[in-house]
Amino acid sequence: MEEIRFKITEQGSVLEWEFETKNRDIGFVVYFNSSEDSNLVKIVPKRRVDTYYGPEKNSIQCENPGIYTIIFDNSYSWMHSKEVFYRIRVRGPNEDENKLWS
Image (cartoon, rainbow, N blue to C red):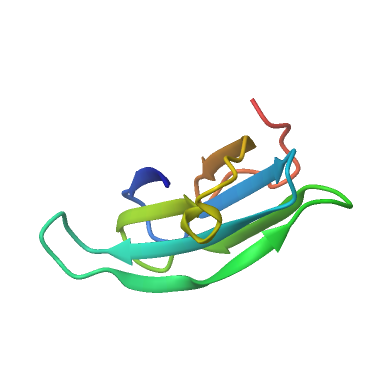
């Protein structure tokens, strides 16, 4: 399991991701919590994403400041490891969405 956290300070920011695996599917979920001590709230439901035909690209608008956690999970396939290639960025509420990935 790979867990990546982002502290979002501006309401209306956008969390964008693009990922793919060499070995078919991977579990993917996005959680939110308002502080390190609060409970996790599922923002993007957990699902297995198959990137055989191309990368998964998506985004969410962050309605509330706090910590957003992206998790890649391969626990259902404990016999086969997966290699995940990803790019994730946070775009401020006033940034142009057509700006190239850095």
